[in-house]
Length: 304
Length: 304
Image (cartoon, rainbow over all chains, first blue to last red; front, side):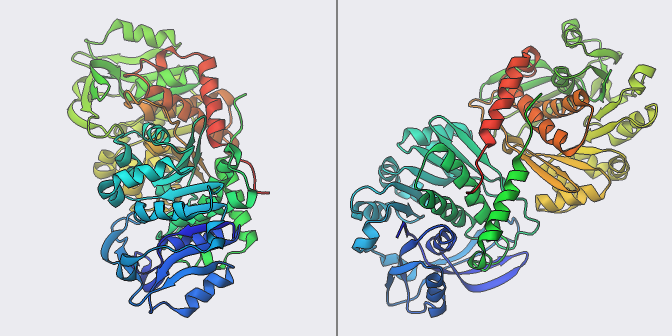
C-alpha cells in the first residue's frame, strides 16, 4: 500500500439544480480513495455502519483499495444531507448525523502503518494526530485537510498537526480564517510559517494554488459545461494530487505542480455526475486527455 | 494612433487598508491609456472639467498619449469616492458626482476615427455605439467593457453594441447577470452567441478567462503580496491586453492568450500603489520580468 487515507465514509443526500439523490456513497475517504486509486495502491481507515452496502465495499475493492482498515460498527453510517440550489459552488447543510462516526477510533495494522504516503482527510485534528503517531516512523509525505469547525474548536491540536505535516490542503476561506489574513498570498505565507513545506489552497470553481517557500503555482479549474454535483470535488483533487505524488515517488516543486493539475483533472470529473458516479468509471485515457486539456487551457507564448 | 479609447477621466477619493487618498487621477480612460501606452500609441476621448490638473495632462503626454480628444468643459471633473475596507477586492461606493461627464458627447477627429483599434470603456452603451458609428469604417478590432447599471437600464443598446464588437471585457458577476446563467462557462458561451468572437471574463483576484468559439484560456492573477489599491486594475488589464494586440497587429487565439497575460501583468502593477502611481512609472524591463513570472506561476510538466 502506497497511500493511507483516514477520513469519513458517508451516505449523502444531495440536491443540486441537476437533480436529487438519496443516500449516495460519499465521505472524504471514499472520494479520496477512488480518485487516488487511478494512480497508486490506496488503503482506507474509517468506520462504516451495519447499513453499509456490500456493493460499495466491492466497488472499493474493484479499485484495488485496501478496505481492511474499515471498522464495521453497530449503528448507522455517517449521513450528511445538503443542497446546492442557490449557489452550485456552496453547499447548504440540511442535516448531519455522525452516527457510528461519533465514536470512531482509527486502528492501524502494520501494513497501514508502513504506508509511505499519508493523507489525513478532514476529521478532528486529534484523530489526525493519533493516526500520524501510529505510523511506523515518518512517512515520506504527510498531508492533511481541515475545516472551519476545527479551526474554531480545536485550534491547538490543529496547529500541532500542521507543524508536523508536509502540506496542508485547505479552502481559501479557511486559510484566511486560520491565519487571520484576508489576502490569499499573505495567508499562504502565514501557513508556511506554521511548519509545512507547501500548502495547497483550494479555490473551488477558480482552481487551486500551491505555495511553497520559493514558488507559487496557479492551477485553474477546468471549465466544465455542466456541474452536476460538486460534492467531494476537493477530496478527489487531493486524491489525484497525492496519488500522483505516490506514483512518482517525489515531492519536489515540479512534481507538486503536475500533481495540482492531476488533482484539478480528477476534481473536474467529480463534478460531472452525482457522488462518485463519474470518477468510479474513468479510464487512464480519459484522465490523460483531460489533463492535456489543462495544457491547452493554460498555454501561452512568451513576449517577443 | 493605434488605439482609441473612450471612457471616463475622474478624480477619485479612495480608502483602503493601506491608506487614504483624496482626488487622485482615475477613470477608465486614464487607467486604460497609461497601461496601453507601454505597448502602442493611444488616443483618448473623454471630458475633463476646469479643475483638471495640468500635470495630469502632462503625464498623459509624457506617455505619448494623444489628448486632443479630451473636451474641456466648464464645471468639475467626474468624481468618485469609494472604500475597500471590508474587502480589498470589492469597492463600496461612497459618492459619485458625474459633473461634466453628465453631458459628455464624444467628438472624434479624423485621426481618431481612423484608429485601427477601439476600446469602448465602461460608459453608457448609447455613447459607446455613437463612438463606434463615428469611426471611418470598421476598425480591425473593437472591444468594450460594461457594468451592472447598463445591463439593468440600457440592455437593448448594450445588446446592439455587443453584436458589433469583436470582444467584450466583463466582470464575472456581470457576465452572469447579462446572460442569466449562473455558471461561468455557460455565461461565456451565451455571450459568444450574442455576437462577439471572444469574451474576456475578469475575475478580480482570480485572474481572467478568455473564451472563444474553439478555445478557452485561464490567466491567473499574480499573487502580489500587498494590494494597496485595486482601483483601475480592470482597465489596466484591458489597456495591456489591447495595447499588446495593437502592437502585434493580430487577434488570433495565440495572440489573445499572450494578451491576457500582458493584461494580468499590468493589472498586478496597478494594485501595488494608489491610483496610477505604480503604472505611470514602469519600465519595459519590469513589464517583461513580471510577464515572465506568469510563466513560472503557470508552468507544469506533462504526465509521463
